[in-house]
Length: 467
Ligand code: FAD
Image (tube, rainbow, N blue to C red):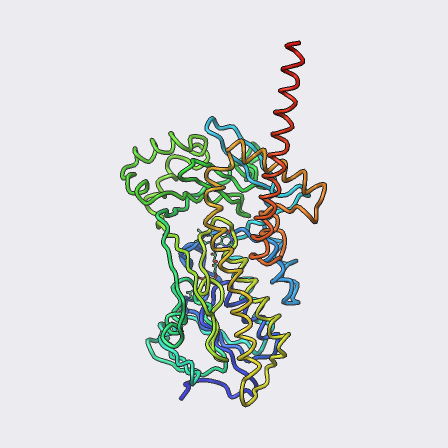
């Protein structure tokens, strides 16, 4: 029997995992009048000073159109509120070998992605849950087991070291890449599952603010860009924070990390590859390299995401991607919005009914609709690592990007760059990939025609000059 559960009428949803995606899901379900119970393993992050202590993940994130759309559709103005504490990034700033800087705008119409601190966004979502009396949050609750047929979940209250049980009509697994709900699902359904650790890892470093002549804090670099130091087989990036610092993330193969064992090896490495960053980070602070955790990078694809009318996984629990497209959270937020749309279409209400056929059909439809898109963005995220660490300095890539930009300006609805479709629109990821493929074909044909015309002109000029 459940331990401490209220007997409120109506459907009950248990959301396992109070990360960004789980809390957004709580808001959407509360808006639909469900009784929402959210269970999070960690402590309440509000009021805790250290960002890194509550999250093993990045300190800041790039928020883009899909994420903003899902925030907007809560109907709670969250998209507008969040824009008060983000920093717009209008393009990439490429740091070349001799310290030269090159700005590459993301879009020809001034489109921006936004740097947001994970903790601030989490706190905004958590504080918004207070608007709903039908949301209950249980921190320090680790899901141990769940029975999908009966809807019974068992948690360990890690603060009090006791076991507690709850029941739910619907169980949502938003418990991240190493999801326990997904592991349980695998026991009851034939789940296709693929996971891949890439051989690269990441480590975060900090560029502190500088103090100007008047004693004011200033950014050490242009804050309205995502900074990249591309080194072909590895790279460092930096995103701005509101306190005028930057969080740098060094991505490189594990063997390169392993090869740096002493402070002098570290300095030599940075002098060789990122010399302009040393005065910005400071030699002393660079030693954070040895203290800060080294994160591994995993990509996970699976199918289906649901079990009958009882359970569904969303966010990283359903599709974990490498972070190079800045889409993991955005995609997870979009999952929530799409699940809500599917509920609307299948008329799933907060009222219990005998056969749960509405929920059954809606969850099936969600897997069917969303799987292709999740696969597409996981693949694009892998692809974008090559673009960021290498292509951004390749002349052919740059020429092609320019031509694509001009064509987009001339025919904005016909030729749309891939980055624009992924980051500045809400079109399905799978449609973006399909469109990108035929556009690439078109661009190649245009390139070929231009090449042939130039060759013919040169030939003509040569003959003309000889005569
Ligand atoms: P999580 O954030 O992992 O949250 C899961 C929650 O579940 C956690 O709070 C965990 O404590 C809890 N939990 C786990 N197990 C249990 C259990 N048994 N019981 C109860 N609770 C449990 N995305 C972007 O969109 N833009 C970016 O710029 C970006 N940059 C990134 C940079 C890096 C280096 C990395 C690693 C990721 C980045 N991402 C980015 C991806 C983004 O961080 C994730 O996609 C996002 O955090 C997923 O949210 P989630 O809520 O699904 O999972």
